[in-house]
Image (tube, rainbow over all chains, first blue to last red; front, side, top):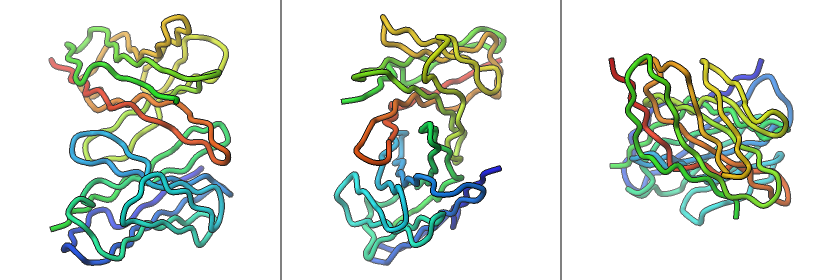
Length: 111
Length: 115
């Protein structure tokens, strides 16, 4: 069966510091991968998605970036965090029928 | 553009009563529709989806959803609510892209089931 991991689970970072969040998927090959942010409240904002190694589509201009160095690894990064980057970051993988399965999330607080 | 709307921010229901969480959609072509549930500080969990076929879709935890093409709706239902059903519910629709399809989510509906 497929599983999706995210780490860290929680992170507190100062403004201006770098960021690296990691997502890995097990039990499937060549999945579509997605990064979302859920700000306080509830809305889900799609940040990036990837259909293959090295292929990244950006949805919203911002100071975040994503990379996919391996088939089942998706990384979200920033060189300098802003206060507005605080939120709950969710990674998901997608099937051929477009169902997405989500990881447990990373709670990021930027102070 | 493909979109979904969840008109209720919150739904309150007594345990044992039937529940409905509403979702309407706007798509060009045939819709692929989804329901997800989120418990506090957790990722979203897939409940069910409609792609084609029977308008009544059965999913996890006793939930079902009814696809209504004429009303462009995809309401989530459960015959008898449990306190443990209290959570945030999201409706979503598939968005076709040139490569790699996406989901567009509604704003979410907070379900509160009380004793």
